[in-house]
Length: 258
Ligand code: NAD
Image: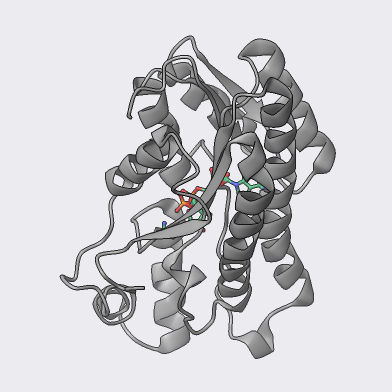
């Protein structure tokens, strides 16, 4: 199930954190990889480190032309995409009443427009190639629960569940599966940045943010790791039938149980 030889995967936000860990795991499993990121230089460096079957793509997932061109280049250089991981994301911490409309729109654009544009491009290639495929959307425990000061993030991550379920229904006839991975807190740059921001908003120490906010509801007070998420993404990429589609998998040390 973990053999991805002959498969082509495109991972967005793959120059850093979770996306990079997934792309590396896929490369090790034998896939040809498109490392897509708005940070073009970092994407190129990451791809280089993954070997000769990886390419770096400059791709802002909110830009329709860049997404479509990135997929076209992937098809030309690596072959049509079999696996999409729509992972690019950012976080903006703010009380709802103080949140700028521009920040709300930016968050929804990256998390939702980005998932739509990359899914559409991937499905077109998968349908044309006639080999089916696996679409993985990076949700969050916040696809199922809410937290203060994260209104657009929580809204967007909940929205991805609806998108995955719709892809599952429309994709089934073509052997295209769609699932959402919902991680708990993983210590990536996205999370390191918000520890002091949350401490400031809540008026508590950074240690208290980690213990009493981020990890409070886990079963063991542990962070989720990059490897935990990469293993889950490997499992979903390699799963071979429509039996597992339209689902969300919480990988969060029991923070939320469904
Ligand atoms: P990260 O900051 O380490 O990496 C995010 C990457 O996305 C960066 O390389 C960044 O350049 C890229 N990116 C940002 N905007 C982009 C755009 N418009 N187009 C293309 N690329 C863009 O963050 P991470 O923690 O690895 O987060 C990856 C995903 O995992 C996000 O969707 C995030 O919401 C989700 N997630 C993270 C955690 C966590 O605890 N770290 C938990 C749950 C879900």
